[in-house]
Length: 250
Image 1: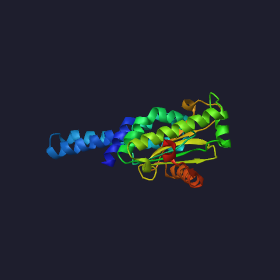
Image 2 (image 1 turned 120 degrees about the vertical axis):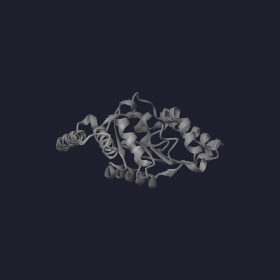
Image 3 (image 1 turned 90 degrees about the horizontal axis):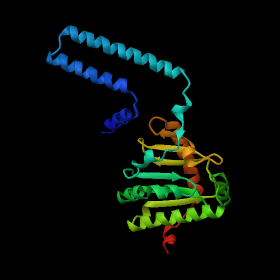
Image 4 (image 1 turned 180 degrees about the vertical axis):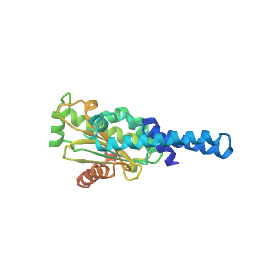
């Protein structure tokens, strides 16, 4: 089932199309040969055509491997909505961010669906009333005040607590805060699984969220760098203080 999902994902992304068409053509030729619908001459011509396609693909792959990757194929603009549909189906979601204000306003329904299915949600945020939050206010575009960012953070946490409490799932939501402004924002789906994936958005001075330089990592295809980002998250998570969400409901 996972194999089929990977094939469909590749097709949607326009990746490995020639390979899949070649496999399909090979299966069709095998069927025609087995049922004797096609003549030997027709089969030989088809096989020769497939071998030509395979040879051409191998030459293309060799050329692409020897050429440096274009920046456009590595980086993209921050597009969290591409992950939005995966949240309700995830078993675990982690978000490393500043205040969650924009995320909560857009993803309430997705978080609610994920919790309803029993997913685990982890949020590592900048500590309230901290020097890191003050720095965050200076780097955002448009710039805001420290008081505004503190208010956004408190409002986001309270709303998150309300959503979890309404489904009796407070125990499935863990929030920690740290006096540290990370160089990136991270959204990861099933980060402990071999099928996990994440989007990493670099934090730069006075840059709109949607304009941030971002890249996507897959646990299967980008193992080293996927683990690198996840390990940085784990280190920060261990040093962070837990936020008692139940206290926000009083």
